[in-house]
Image 1 (cartoon, one colour):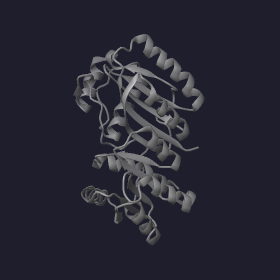
Image 2 (tube, helix red, strand yellow):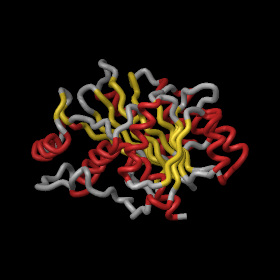
Image 3 (cartoon, rainbow, N blue to C red):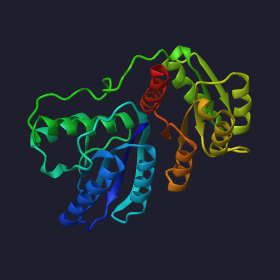
Image 4 (cartoon, rainbow, N blue to C red):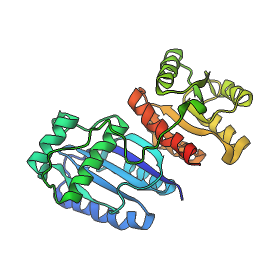
Length: 293
């Protein structure tokens, strides 16, 4: 069974009390256990910050429910990617109120990730977001908010890291904005990819796929005459399980678009504007599956 990790933030409904939070956690623990979902929910002064791991169908259903839940305002998807193994495997639902954190631990995390009006700044970068969640998860395992004098460097290798030979893989970048496409091409070269193709929409991308089949496709969603969703749909129809690994580059977080991409079998999302660390992290998650296969 393929496993995925989803990380998001949302603004907390301002009149949400302790009893409401307990209700959310009790409901999550009951439902998540049935769905095979594990994770960690961090409660800040004005925000929720959560990681969820499990089967894609279950995660899709749960995130769509969260987007409709009035207790969550302005949900923001930070990361959605396939994983080799769970990192938050013990809990179907665990809530942590950062206001009750050991002061020494809070100080270390603020020093590492920055400070906001809610306390610890939540990183927009997917790997840094995962790093913060995993730091807190690890600290709980040491003991309940145990004192510690050191935390791992957030740019260090994640637990799932494998060595990747980027040069042996061909990448196709499909993006209608020429400037954005050139920036992504440069980032890919810096990562270490040697074979990089490009196209400005889904129709021209299909021609590129026919010429030299890629191993990985990075694709915008909103393009003309053929958008990214239609392009992926045609690829799935033509190639089935042999379809290249596929990552969407998008500023869209609407439930209908995300769910459609899930149904078509997208491997990951990269939220625009694309940052180098974000690009490398998501590519590593996806390409490592090719190396493992």
